[in-house]
Length: 189
Image (cartoon, rainbow, N blue to C red; front, side, top):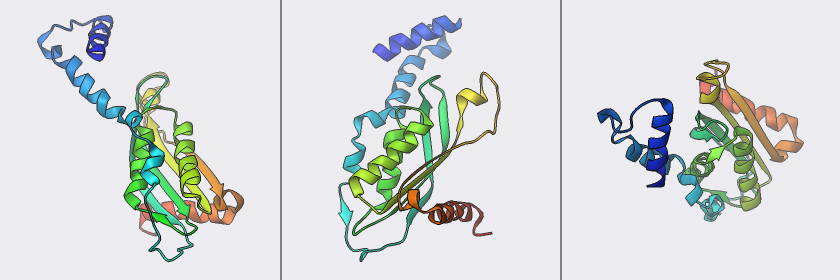
């Protein structure tokens, strides 16, 4: 009810009538959308990584999940941030199910965010919970606040990176990680 009241106020402030036929159901629709867009507040991201598997037989190379769809909301303008996350880690003894990497990204993305903080939160949670030899997170995203207001520049992508452990210490490993992302997008060409 609180969101619906606020939406009616915003509609009025924008210069329209919240009682107009086309806007009558808008407050309820926005309420449902907000529940979905900000569902990450109800999730404990670390809990997503609690179940691990040892069947990987001490796999030592990088586990990388590319192009995880990402939808978030800029905390400064409440405009959409849309992009992809690339998440990798170098396990010690155990691995996590790959869907958990996607869920981790979504749990943090579905909050009011800054892309820089989002990148760090994903990386730190993997680092703290899995205790791997290394963690790498790269996010490429466009920001609605930049594309639709202010400078009005569309097609601009922001990249943020987070490196821990092996990835922080080894430039060649970072280059390999970035090349793997590029190869995944181009099919190795």
